Length: 529
Image 1 (spheres, rainbow, N blue to C red):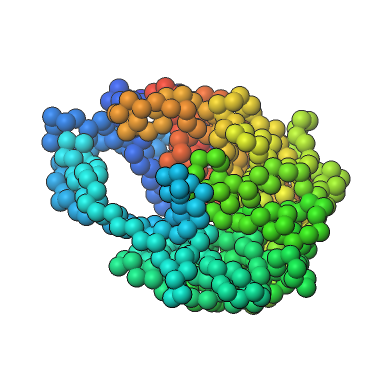
Image 2 (cartoon, rainbow, N blue to C red; image 1 turned 60 degrees about the horizontal axis):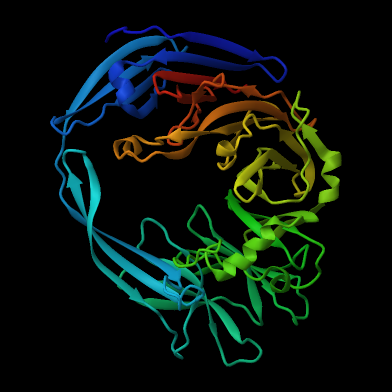
C-alpha cells in the first residue's frame, strides 16, 4: 500500500443546538488515473474502515480492467491506495424477453385510444469485449395482441404491474356491458409469457370510478374506487388489495372524508397501507370532479400525461385545495381517515431554527419524497411544492397517531436557479435517541455536462442533478427543528448512483462525493445521536 496523498481538510462539527450530533468531512485528492476514471464502489467494514474504489477507463487495446482503491480508517484518516487488475471477460450472447401493456399507439387513429394492447419483445443482447458491457444487437421479434373478453368486447386499459421474478403482467381494465345498472365493468386481466390471458373479477356492484391504484413493496396491488354520479352515497368508497396473481386479499367499504378526494400517493409500512390525498370544496362524485385515475402508457400521446384520460386527471393536480387527508388501512379495516383544513397549517407551521423565509403550506400541489412511520407511531411526509417544471419549497408534514396534523416544518432551499429547480431533492429520516428524528435533505445542484461515465464516453452532455446533504433534528414532543447543517461547503457533491449510506453498526450516515471537476474525493460522516 502506498501513502501517496494527504487529506486536504479534516473537520469535526458538533451541533450543540440539537443534540450531540457529530459531523465530519474530509477531502482527498485523486490520482491522475482516477480522475480519468469513475467512482465504482464503496465499502464500510465492520470496524468502520472505508474502501472507495475507482474504475479506470476501459482501454480497447488492453485485455485488462484496472482499479484504484482508497482506504480510510474509522476516523476518516487516509491510509493509502492500492491498485487492482482483472482480465477482461468474454460473455455469451443471450436473448432477452420482456412484456408490457399499453393503450393506443402512434398512429392518428390510436393517439386518443384507450384500448389495451399486450406486447412481447425478444431482443438479442451481445457482449462488447472491448467496452466490457452488453448492448442490444437487434430485435428478434415483437408480438402485439389486442385482447377481447368472451363476449367479444375490447378491454380499456387503466394500469399495469409486474414483479421481477415472474414474467406475468397484472392489468386493471374495463369493458362495456349490456347491463343498464352496470354499463361498464372493471376487472383484472392477467397475461403470461405465452400471451395467454386470464380474467379475474373485482367485486364492484354498481357504477364506480378508479380513484387511485399502486403497487406495494410486497408486489401486491391496491386500488380505491368511488361511486359514480347517481349512486345512493357517492362518498362510500371501496379499498381493494390483490396479490400479483389477482387473488383478492382485502375488500373494505368505507366513508371517504370527501366525496371527491384526489389521492396522489400510497405507502406500505409493517403491513399497513397509507394513502395521501387532498380535496376541494366540491361535494359531487369523484368522476364528476376529477375524471378517473389511469396511469397506463400510450406511446403516441404527447399532450402531457400518460394518455388522454390521465391528461384530464393531471390538470386538477395544480388546483389549490381546501383539505389534506391521510388514510390508513390495517388488514380488513380502515384504521383512520383524517382531514386537516389547509387554513390550519399556518398556525402549526414551525420553520427550522434560523429560517426566516420558509413558508407554510398553502394547498397547491405537494409531491412526497419520503413517508416515514416513527417508533412512536407518528407519521412524517417530506417533499416539495411543485408547479410544472419547478420543484419549490421544502416541506415536512408531521401527523399524530390518528393522522391529524401535529406540525408542518419548513426550510429554505439553498439553490433557486432554474437548472436546479427542475430536479427533485431527496429526503430521508433516521431514528435517533429519545423523541427525536434526524431529517436528511439531499438538495439538488443542477450541472451541465456528463452525468455518467458512459455519457462522457458517448459524448452525450445534458443537464443533470448532483446533491449535497443538509441535516437537522426534529424534536417530536416540542415540534421544533434544529438549524440545518449543510455539508460539502458548496464545493462537493454526490452523484445519483452514490447517495447517502446508513451504517447501523454505529448509527452513522456516510456520503461519498466529488468536486465539480471530479479531481477530489469528499467523504462526509454524520454520527446520529
